[in-house]
Image (cartoon, rainbow, N blue to C red; front, top):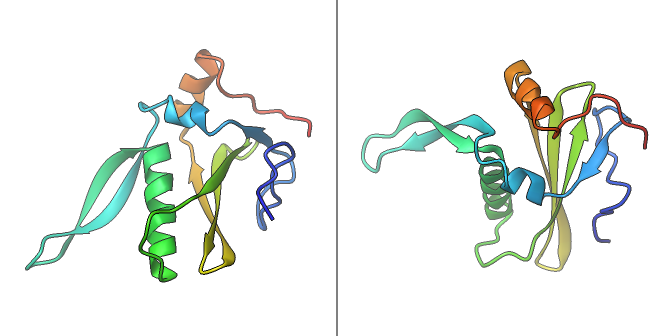
Length: 131
């Protein structure tokens, strides 16, 4: 069952009011970033915090989830982005067939007030949506 690119997907624990937007919107906003904690080092492992564009972090999160599910090859992934204006959250919903079974990964990102304000200035964020 492919993702619904028109109406979106209901995500447990998220607001019922959201807007489905093209994923390309976030691919074209490389200045919209998030901090990701990673393990670094080959001999002495340590946690480091790195900054990534939100889309890159979401894609990386999905690849890691599919890798944990046992898949290591190239992925044919479907993805939608859903904006939750009242909560200030964007969720990326990924779907890929892993060993013949559809696996879903949800990567939510809570935007800061500053990020939302910047997106409003460039006309990329609305708090109220009727779906």
